[in-house]
Amino acid sequence: MTGAPPEGTVEIPPELGGTPTLREVTRHGERLLRDAGVDTPDLDARLLTGAALGMTRQHMLIHATARLNQPQVARVLGFIARRVAREPVSRILGRREFWSLDFTLSAATLDPRPDSETVVEEALAGVADKRAPLSVLDLGTGTGCLLLAVLSELPAAMGLGVDQSTEAVATATANARRLGLGPRARFAVGDWMTGLEDRFDIVMSNPPYIPDAEITTLSPEVTGFDPRAALAGGADGLDAYRAITAGLGGVLKPGGRIIFEVGFGQSHDVAALLEAAGLSQIGFRKDLAGIERVVFGHLGA
Image (tube, rainbow, N blue to C red; front, side, top):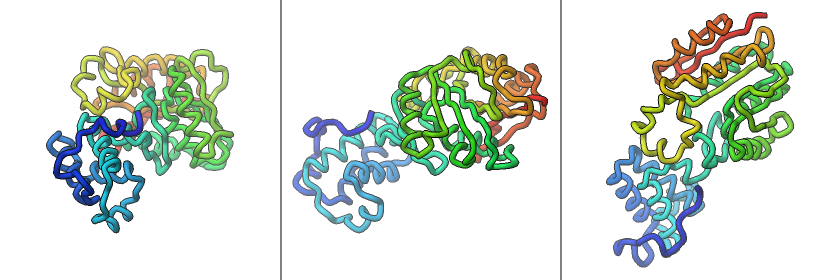
């Protein structure tokens, strides 16, 4: 889902014929995005123009009056057209920054959101010795962002990421290799914890938690481009939590911790599932918007 449409498939308006300046093309893109109802048309136009031309923001500022040829204009407008169709910028670029790390996306992976960094924060907050040889399990790993972010902060830790999608596992494996974390991270295709024999100090998951009936109400950036399997959480959004909590006793070490990302208004329902599964010291962590985004618990020693 990366790259622009082939040259010649994008109609170039008369005002951008010839050799328009970089500033003119960027502002035209901004107008198109604003008319399409995109929330941040100026930012998105700048990011997409820079990406299409291989320019940094500083380069764009310095060369704002530089003239672009028609293939360059077509490439920029190709990126803009995809955003007008509500494809997220991260999907167009094929990458997303998470925890200050660069992750490649694929059609089979959720686009990591900043809210999910709350999971990483809680995972690290519960580690007294950052150099301890801990074991970490990430269920529904997608791009591998949660697992790899945690491993980047715990130099002696090892981790396993599990996902039902073969393509997602391949994407996560490539991300680990590119980030230099390949020797400490492995990824496997699986159905949550089925077949796992190891036990872990930390189990994390950002499972699908959108009630099925609400998926169509989400933004087109989500419904059109995130995989449904990473969104649909059943009738009440809690199916994945039930499946995972039922098997926690088989994968958590005594004293180990489970850390869930949850949707708006789900924190206490998920906490009740953890309590019913025999976990203790259950708590919550809010994201930057003040929403209870994380629920965690401990397995008694």
